[in-house]
Every structure is written in C-alpha cells, then in structure tokens.
Image 1 (cartoon, rainbow, N blue to C red):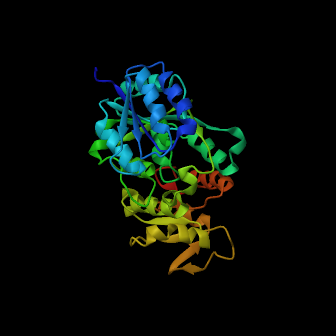
Image 2: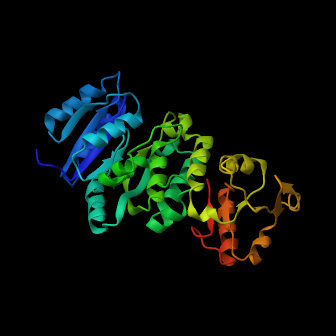
Image 3: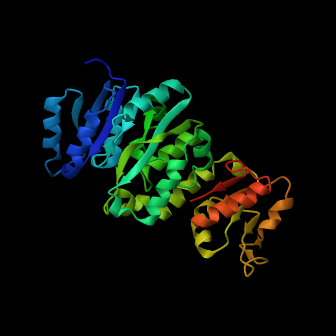
Length: 336
C-alpha cells in the first residue's frame, strides 16, 4: 500500500452499538488518502467482528489489538503504528461530517505553523444534553484562533478529543500521551502549549459528538474537577507569567480549595480579590483580601488568576479588567 497522508486513530472497547454508524461516517469522507487504525482495547462484545466486516470491504482499515488494556495504551500503540503524516483522532461512538478530513488537511497544509487543528462540534442526541455541557460546547465552539486557545487554555479543555488532527512528529517528540490521574487529552494540549506549539480550530462543525450518561468525562475520576485542578496547577506553576507577582480573584471556600494545588507548589498571591464586603479587609493565610479597585493603581500590573466559575460573572470580570487596561491571556487568565 502507498503511504497515506492521514492516519485515523480509533480505539474501541465494547462499542458494538455505535461502531457501524461511526465507521460508515469514516468511509464516507470526501478525502480518501487515509488509513483507519481500528484498535481493539480488549473488547468482550462483537465489536471486533464488526470491524473485520468493514476490513473485508476496504483495505484502508487496519485491525489492531492493543497490547495493554486502557485508552492511553491504545492511543500510543496507534500513534506508533500510524504511517500518516497527520493523525486524526476518532472515537467509536461519534460521527465525522463528510468534509472533516478534507478541511483539516487543507488547514494544516496551508498553516505550516499549526501543530494541531480541531473543529467545532455538535452534541447529540439533543434530548440528553444538560445545561452545563451545553454551555461548555458554546464556549468551546467560540474558542477558535490560536490566540483564543492560548488565552483560555487553563479555563477548560478547548477541544473535543475526537475532533482533532495533529502532526504526528510534534506529538511523538513530546512523548505522546501520558498515563496518570488526569485526562490524557487535556494534558497533551497543555504540554503542546507549554512547548510553544500553535493550535487552532476551524469555524465549522465537522464532528457530531455523542453525549451519554456513561461517557468517560462523566464517570472517570481522571476527569473530575479535582483532577483538572491538579493538572492545571502543574502547568500553571511552570508558566512564565506566574514568575512575577500574581493575585487570585475569588476568596470563597470553594475557590481556595480549587487553587490549593497551585499554592502547594510554593506559589503565593500578593492579594485575594473579592466583591463581598464581609471578606474585604480580612486576611487569608497572611494575604490581604481586597476589592477589585485595588488593581487599578498597581504598577506593574500583577497577573490576575480568575478562579470564579460562575458563567455570568466571566463577562463582568473581563469587562472590569479590560477597562483597567488588563489584557486577556496576557495579564489575566481564567482558571477552570
């Protein structure tokens, strides 16, 4: 076989209920220069038989068995087996739009400085989508440019994992996916950001992302709020912007719990910012709690880490800081 330009890495385990629709969407792609690596992660249902049926129909499908159990092992096995220059991620319960590969390949070929390109996504089925996930997708679908993603990388994971395409060599040079008590995809995006790699997103919906009660982001402890807080803190502590003075916006108990992993690495804010009159004037761990106006006359301006999670408050806090000449992604960051 000729070496394909794109390798689609598709791990699966006990996915018989959704595999057929997923595979049909892959083979309906307008871009045809790809191989599909279907990696069996120790399935106990008839998933493998379904994959073999498609293999008999299209030689671009390669049936592989992961040597070790677990998603990270299957992903890294797929990366090392892949022959393509570009890696397109896919999950067995999602659906590619027909133009997905075509548009993402064109974007990476046009932008040689992009290491990764994702796309907007649409959640389905509509009736199962809860308000929190709907808001997350609304934010994610608006976070498009490399600058947007760099500015908001600590807020949430900016990509739906099965929507991304990346340059294989860039990810292998970073050590591929890491295994640990964290989400392997968000950890990879943070490492790519830390390495100075540019990532962007196309302003089209190219993936239908299935929502279900048992999806990993709902049930896996590696995707818990605490796990995300620890992961963000690990990379925040290495961010050059934190090497100067910084403040934390939010002095409530929940905020203090969420930023504890950062402070446990020996970093300390010069102030806590809060709007609650009952808190202003107090001290927390020897650090004063002050009103937002305290920031107006600080020179040089400290980095502001906004740990407030209320969606309505994001806009108000950003508006206040921007009116005081703070710049999102430069001297203020949303965290979680």
